[in-house]
Length: 278
Length: 184
Image (cartoon, rainbow over all chains, first blue to last red; front, top):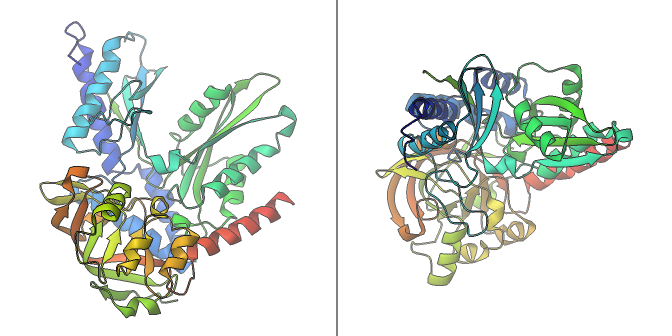
């Protein structure tokens, strides 16, 4: 893909995407580090304590060596926030893709993106509809990169509950984690989308992951406690903490619907936001 | 359960048979990375290294200029149906994340152990590893068999040679707790 000559924002967006990607895959956000350290300090299971010790050492080593925390550097999920004076152009999308290609070459990232049927790997983490780009209006011009690993994404789930079964929301989330077992690299963060439509609930669940994880509402805390009763623990080896946090985002929905989506996120909850310098 | 780590060095021998699920282990010596493709190639063409007392690491590393950049474990369960021949040839340890199925649990009995390494700990892994060589490079970086020297890699015994399986025990308790939760 060539640089669109008529779009001055192309290179600025590419650079911000690259910088956000690099920050995300090497350094965990402070709120995520905080909840991991808190859970590690409270853990009583000796095997889980060993797993937490490895996780904490890994966070330090990634920082010291300037290398990715995890070799599954995920697929690029990008949130673009546009102020009122930035028009939404094809150049912005292409700028994000260029930033992803640069990040793949220079950090480096593992090339994870393939055609869904032929399984041909594009080699640069871009492809049809990839990166996934969500655009939202805002005050500042920013790029948020959320590299999403497959282990946790693969055990995410969605259900369309009967509106009369609101009490089933927590049960569905607990059941999703039970079925996930140790596969999503717990301790996890669970992003929950409630309401909207079938596709909208899934998008909400992912957006919920971007909220601070070191604070929970009573509703979120209760779900988190229920999940932690399972005792799956770090890596499925048992322990007090299966979920570090549960974050819920809601939207209005049809009076006859109650969509609930759970997006599972491994302990390496990587995301970073960088302002686009115009 | 040993909380102090047991130090092991490859090639591994009968000492692994005395380990118990939940024991902490620090492993040094040579390991061979292998994912799905490498297992299938080895089944077809033979094992390209001496398998006696060797350790297999389920991992698709990121290697740059013969340096390990990132080398966390991959999901071992994908190799559930592909591991028997390795143990038949004298492999003593399988290393990965997430545990393995009942078939492997049986195959490990009186022969070897499954060692779990913390998922996502790619940077920690790389700081304990040196690249010594590679087989099947044509399979690509992630699927090739990399010969890697470990220096005290911190692991935990997930499945021991007596058939104790920490992952299965934890999920058994999780299912019981879920049933209690549902009926509250």
